[in-house]
Length: 187
Image (cartoon, rainbow, N blue to C red; front, side):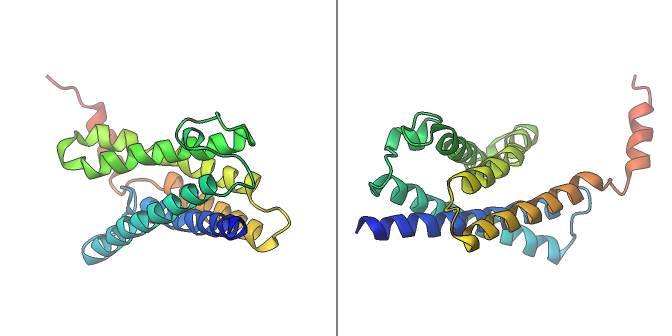
């Protein structure tokens, strides 16, 4: 039974990082700079939300099976408080910190209609830290002798970095107008 939990933990971890990467890519696409418009924007945003939900389900299974299996000792406290694990405290801690940030992003997204847009956006930007933490967690704790697992995580890193690089390198279509407005004197 413990061996089955170990395999399920690894599998759900890999599916989680793939889904998280897809969510990050779709988030980069929907971010303000060259975001889609009309029906395509609705489809992309719906995919972003649904994949986020699916990712949280797989992540919950990953955490539950990591706690339940006894090959390594990761307890419930270590799944909530970063860097408290007796096993690979740094790498497990990065995963825990990523989960804690994810909880903040999810809660503020659920409460978005009750929060100021600026508050939601600032918390949501933490996903730019969450995703690399999850990738490093996966690379450090993933099964290094399983080429498919390592290759999947590396591919996620490359795809995610490409999407974030694209998002950060593009400019707003109305950049000149924004600059002009910022230079105006306000009375």
